[in-house]
Amino acid sequence: MKDKNSIGNVLRVAVGVCLVCAVIVSTAAVTLRPLQEENRAAFRQLNVLRAAGLYEPGMNVSAAFERIERRIIDFDTGSYVDPPGGFDPVRAVRDPAQSRALSGDPAGIGRRTHYGEVFLAYDDGGQLERIILPVHAYGLWSTMYAFLALEPDLRTVAGISFFEHGETPGLGGEIDNPRWQENWVGRRVRDQAGNAVFRVDRGRTPEGVADADYRVDGLTGATITSKGVENMVRFWLGEEGYGTYLTRLESRIRAGEVM
Ligand SMILES: Cc1cc2nc3c(=O)[nH]c(=O)nc-3n(C[C@H](O)[C@H](O)[C@H](O)COP(=O)(O)O)c2cc1C
Image 1 (cartoon, protein in one colour):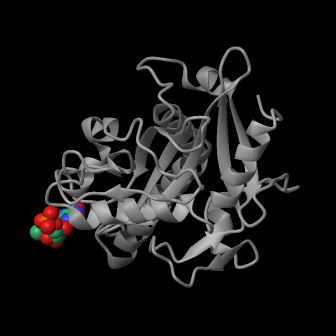
Image 2 (cartoon, helix red, strand yellow):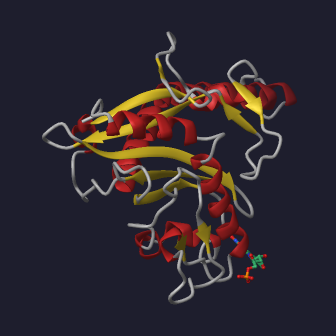
């Protein structure tokens, strides 16, 4: 009778178990990938709606998202583009043909894509209600990703929603706190001339300062994260970010070309 505990037998069983497990894990990874991507897309949609102040718990997110139009813009010209293969910001930022290294880089992001996404929310009457801009910057430990929603005046914040970061819970992680995010509503991020002027204070914004509209309270014990958030807003609403697009859109709105 063959020895069940022989080295050959032990190795055969071990290799067999490894093969079976490898097949199970890779099948699960492949079959679950579309579901993961679907969930990721749904989570992004939820956060776009949240930033725009259009999210209510329990709502059908994809149905609510139907009133939102996704457009691709060229950051340098500020015009809409329609790239034949679509636009994937995650791939584009890694591709030297679709992005460039930033020299000053106040937001600590290294590269910026040539194109970007914007989301336009319309009300039931077809009037432009919100403009939602994806923005990101480095905080203390991580790149923080958010959607920043503006009113149709393109200066006033309608809301902000951070959806990915690795800042410390309770400190920099308080960027997720809805009470802090509420402070943003009604604040201005661009002045009359279209310059990106915005400040996240160290602690509370002092009472009675003339530019209080352009400032939000900082996060206690998280000055570095707060500074990252300030840099994020200034960079993305500035010339290298959405500045040119917003100036163009502003004149189109004034001319009555955009409802
Ligand atoms: C474990 C640990 C985690 C921290 N996490 C953060 C953080 O997420 N964001 C941040 O700005 N500061 C964080 N800090 C504090 C910073 O090191 C730094 O002291 C702080 O940003 C200065 O802010 P303050 O002047 O408001 O205290 C952390 C500190 C420690 C010890």
